[in-house]
Length: 92
Image 1 (cartoon, rainbow, N blue to C red):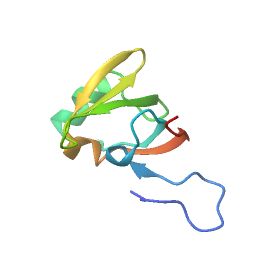
Image 2 (cartoon, rainbow, N blue to C red):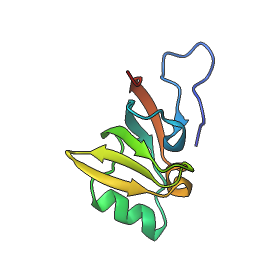
Image 3 (cartoon, rainbow, N blue to C red):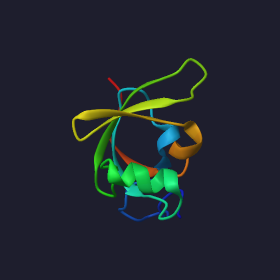
């Protein structure tokens, strides 16, 4: 997995979902293909190309609540660190 795009390329920079700002919208770009937690998240609609919004985080930053396909999911920070996203719009 690439943590960011190469200098001079037009591809958007990739960041872990865990680093997204509250209120920001992003598109899922890379996602682990193994592990029961990740299989479960894919079954709930968290797929490459899906738009997500970070709704809020707990006081210590774990867990995170995201909005995906019209419903809310809660992810552990350790899970969110493995999902790479490209920011579409920053928090207002």
